[in-house]
Image (cartoon, rainbow, N blue to C red; front, side, top):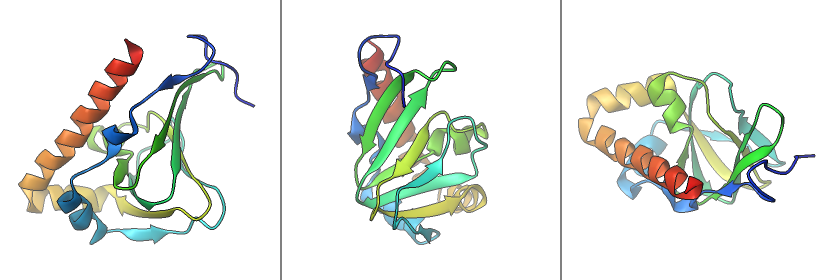
Length: 146
């Protein structure tokens, strides 16, 4: 059971649209992706685990969360279809900063870090689209904090 946030009675809420990417970027990433079965609830990645790739939410729901070291829920968000998840960790070659759990029936695909890097080198315009997603995530986090 999650403990309440020390910041108040509920965790900070991020704007779900912050993770949504340009449709052209989703198409390009999807061409290099592999489907992730989500018949039952499925953890896509956990906070502090090594970032090995990104996940694309095509349909359904994915819950994003951050827990404090004490186990308090600090942040929560529901990703929307068209979202790219795990991008900050992969781009920075750092562990994931949040956890992502797909609901049963969600349609999700995975792009490895290597495939993402190759795509960025082969099509620099897509790199700019990825930066737009990262910037939207930062803006959303800052708004949620203030």
